Amino acid sequence: MNLDLKGKTAMVCGSTQGIGKASAIELALLGANVTLVARNEEKLKTCLNELDKSQGQQHDYLVADFEKPEQLKEQVLKFTATNNVHILINNTGGPPAGLAITAKEEDFVKAFSSHLLCNHILVQACVEGMKREKYGRIINVISTSVKIPLRNLGVSNTIRGAVANWAKTLSVELAPFGITVNNVLPGATMTGRLETIINNQASKSGKSFEESKEEMTKEIPAGRIGEASEVAAAVVFLATPAAAYINGINIPVDGGRTGSL
Image (tube, rainbow, N blue to C red; front, side, top):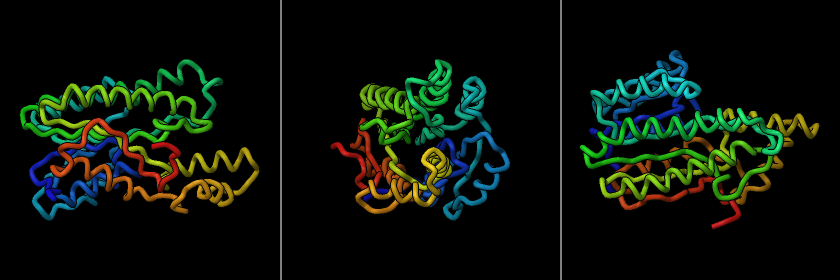
């Protein structure tokens, strides 16, 4: 099985914490040159020093805020003007929890911009290099809500579904160029976002954090909440040569929680 990414350049968004950071670490271990993308430069510098360099990799970072699409576009176009990106990991923190019916119009607009529009900006900036290299892997970290909407995540459910359909469309358009587009759907994964969700649930129900966490765990056949590194393993496999014929799919990484095929 060919898992070698030496000589490949990967751009990883939201890479200073959680699934993004775990994915960047695994990509570097397989030999990829990794460019981290996030808004906090100090955290980017810290993460950069944690990446493996034993195979002569050259790692880099871009400071960009996904709430400022034009800034992101400027930064990524500057980078791709002199670098081919073979692997793009689209990963952005989800919108705040809440009911769809009580969401404001601007909540949807903000989420649509940070997720779909920024993903699209990144793909358009990277795709010509992928075509030149005849190698492209676009992996979007979304949510199992693509398959079954999650309670109290109205805006997130809506926007994640849009991203999934956008990705499927791109997978058909880009396949002739040796470019695949796939979505990884994390279930309950112990990240800062999940801790916030559990805290919110605990606050509303009057229960402790641990009690709310236990209630969530009971819904998972595996009997535990996942780790960011476990989701990253799926992300990074899709980035390898071994995954060349996997295209246009949604892969839940959720311990069996999602109740659909």
